[in-house]
Amino acid sequence: MESIISIENVFFTYTDGTEALSDITLEIQPNEVFVLFGPARGGKSTLLRLLNRLSDLNEGAQHQGSILFNGTDVFDRRVDVTNLRRQISMVFAIPTTLPGSIRDNLTYGLKMAGMRDSNILEERVERSLQQAALWDEVKDRLDASAFALSGGQKQRLCIARSLALEPDIVVLDNPTSGLDPLSTATVEESLFELKKQYTIIMVPHSVQQGARVADRAAFLLDGELVEKGDTQQIFLYPQDQRTEDYVTGRFG
Amino acid sequence: MSRQQSNRLAKAIITIVSAMVIIPIVFVILFVVYNGIGALSWEFLTAPPTNGMREGGIGPALLGTVILTFVVAIVAMPFGIAAAIYLAEYAKDNRLTRWVRLAIVNLAGIPSVVYGLFGLGVFVLFLGFGTSIIAGGLTLGLMTLPVVISTSEEAILAVPQHFRTVSLSLGATKWQTIRHQVLPHALPGILTGVILGLGRAAGETAPILFTVAAFYLPELPKSIFDQTMALPYHLYVISTQVPGMPLTIQYGTALVLLLIVLSFTLIATLVRTNMRRRREW
Figure 1: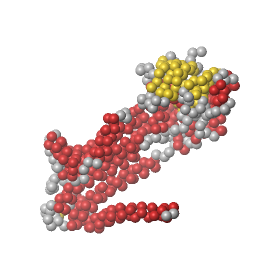
Figure 2: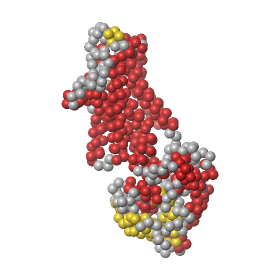
Figure 3: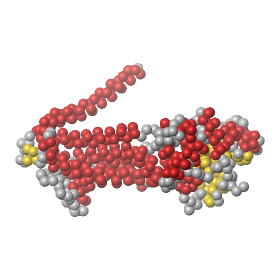
Figure 4: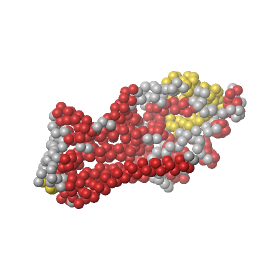
């Protein structure tokens, strides 16, 4: 199968000289849930932020290598970054709702892209909320402030907000970090529906969560890609001693 | 000394020091109100001064100050806010930017009479505006700029980084992010800075002394290239230059000037609390 993302020999160094990523090579297939896991400061978020070039916000940071998205290098001069970020949409660990109503949050990205057709906007609002399993809870108060939602609802709103853009890839950076087990389960379940339509790249909250949701996974340690493979292989029969130590809970 | 004792002592000292600051201010305000309230009337606020300024009102001076404040707002607001956006959002953190910031902080501390002389040299003489509303307004605007820039920049920097990142990650451009997320959030702080700056400009004497203020000019200005009377300078004139000046008119004028400046502060406070309440989290 043709990869949707192909990361080739990527290095990333922050302004202060910290090498966050070292020689990462990775292929991501369409419609899979790809899990990036490993201890903190291993480079997971850095790698995610490179995919849609949110890494541009780190002034003075250096990168090498290439990240091909549908065959085009995201670092190519001709790439329209705002377009790229709509195609590779990101959900953050801390659910940040923007000031305004639930509806405002969902339509923000589309409106910034110049979408004015209220029929399409309405349709996207409903569909994305349903995909994120939030529709039933908020359908009667779309114009209420988004700040009033609970933590779990906010996170699903953030997921819906990304989906409303109809991206190719949804990037989830530890989306259940602040959630209770029940909300976590809701989010995890929605992933199985979502991957029918989207490619999902995710940093999980725990090794266990990674094992539950992943089709394939990669283990990142200190900016190095230690091991990658199918869920079975990497969580049950890891080849590398370090991966085994981490998934069995010997460190991390 | 025990911890409780030092705790009580600290509180006592801080209370006394605060009182030493607050009591004189309250006293000054009450003193001016007490002596000036008798002069206030519609006639006093609108009529021109007569009989060598010993009778009549302060109409032209009041109007002049209102016009000047308006000009200052037009000058200082767009340039100040634009500069603040540039410094907070676009400027790279390099030596040049640091020098610019340092310069702005220092400009805010320059005595106002220096601005007055600068305005005389540049606007009145070099650019040939003469002593006029435009020259005075630009001088006052220049003096207000550093305050507007500093407070606006602070308000912009106080906007949580999350909002910017989220907005950008949803495909908004940098300017859309500033326009739709950063500025609405920073607006109460920006407006507070602008209004306080205007309040200061309305009450300053030195910058208008050589650039716009007329000693005695009962006619109202017809264009921005005319001179005008202005309240702070008028107060200076009737307090020092006119023998046999009735005290009530002096204090009445002082009271009006005080009320103008205080009302700016009050508006700033109201704007801020009102907007904070509307922007719930």
